Amino acid sequence: MTPTEHDTFVIERSYPVSPERAFRTFADPALKRRWFTDGKTQDTEVFEMDFRIGGADRQRYRMTAATPFPGVALSNEGVYQDIVPNERIVLASTMTLGDRRISSSLVTFEFLATAAGVDIRCTHQAAFYEGADGPAMRKDGWNKLFDAFGQALEPA
Amino acid sequence: MNVAPLEVARIFHALGDPTRRAIVETLSERPQSVSHLATPLAITPTAVIQHLRVLEESGLVRTEKVGRVRTCRIEPAGFSVLEQWVGERRGAWERRFDRLGDLLAEPED
Image (cartoon, rainbow over all chains, first blue to last red; front, side, top):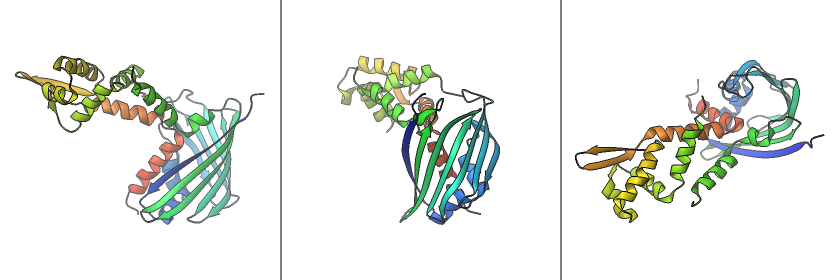
């Protein structure tokens, strides 16, 4: 059996709005759908969220022609573990690509009030199963990008 | 949809050289003639022209000869390709938070 791969990454972003306003974009399904789903790579077929502790969070997408696997279904089934209004959201979920479970994750969103607005800290902890996209694709390509830059910038 | 790999390779090759990066940095302030570029870099105008050819081929710089003077300026097209490539390399979650920023930049109903 392929060893299960584990990964944690943290993304911190600052936005010039109140924590209350930022929190609403996570709590209101219509608002959340606007930033959470990626129209370029996925057609969203299901976007349901029951925003309360123990409530279900479900998305089902169909990958578009802009991806390496057009037409394949990607779904995410989660349950809200903790919600503290304007402060914290914790969500545990499992992602399935086609008929394969590819990863299970615990994602924590923290909303920290600052003088300029709000800092949102997203901590993504996951176990990646066989055939998963891997932590690198999930997080971002920044490390690869900096490697590419580093190589390009090295004197020949 | 995606940026052509060859285009990106040319851009990284062009920016991989410190003299060519210095030329791009100078031109990002304002357009310059070849001789004005050569002096502070302490290289010959011939060498500048060779570097400019690489930068032109990568789509980062444009040159135009008016009378006897060749003027060089930044070409936004190459930078757009570079930006798009960077955008495509950013992962799902980074892009999500970019979109959240766009949403939060809108006036609230």
